[in-house]
Image (cartoon, rainbow, N blue to C red; front, top):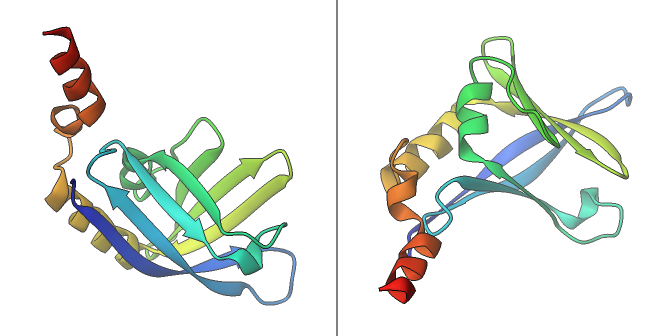
Amino acid sequence: MSPVVEQSAKARLISDAPHPRIVSVLLRYDGSDPLAVRIVFPPEVSLDDSEVVWTFARELIEVGLREPAGDGDVHVWPCGRAQTVFEFSAPEGVALVQFDNASLRRFLRSSFAVVPAGQEADHLEVEQHIGSLIV
């Protein structure tokens, strides 16, 4: 069983409301899926009252802390010196969410302790299982 990193973080939902809504989310990294991270949003912010999970490349957070990154449904960019913005696009609409950089960096450090950057391919369990079947 691969190690899992889970960390709570505060996220600011950016909208046209006078004050941003702050929600607690879960940042999750599973060493058995070393290229991906997940952000789990609570049911109260979804359209159907179920938790919402976004999965995307761990590298997207790392790069997005320094410069705009992303070319699919998830885009990440720095917002000043202390925050980072995530844009999540789905058929239902677009959500903008802001995080403090400190919590994102802490999460990345913990995930890199499980699987260092650049060594993800060494930890891909699917490839290991396929290799054992071929032999």
